[in-house]
Image (cartoon, rainbow, N blue to C red; front, top):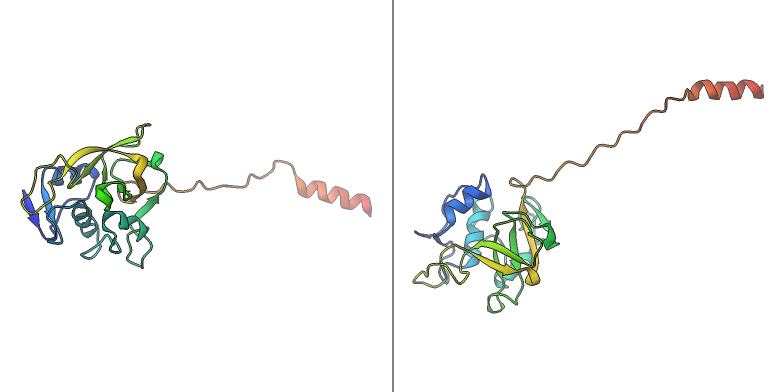
Length: 190
């Protein structure tokens, strides 16, 4: 099914998101048909950002990563942890690829698996080359494998992967009666 403009989609889990978007087309901004950015724009919108996010800074899909610190309502850490090491990728992370992908525009989509120990990752994304064509350009959401050699960074949605709390460190109390020992030393000096 084709959707034009911003629509309400489930974001409770990655599986709910994938089920709602796979094999459908999304043209959030009305430009160039179903592009990879449109799918992530739908996601950003559904988790609370205004229309026209994630920011690209005029750099196409690759610019989403370079614009991650743009302003208070930016692409980053209010809703996402930023992942800079591709070996840390988890299912549902929004991966951004550099200009070596997409004919210089980069690419963006959702990791459909945790990092698997190889240089390849399966992604849920739009306009990936094997999706159903949409007449205005672009392609419906599909699954495709990409090389992580072109990885720029990833956004981990906090609601899907909450940051684990840091362990609380407690200082252990010594079983040795320091007060008695200190009194004994003081009494010897008197």
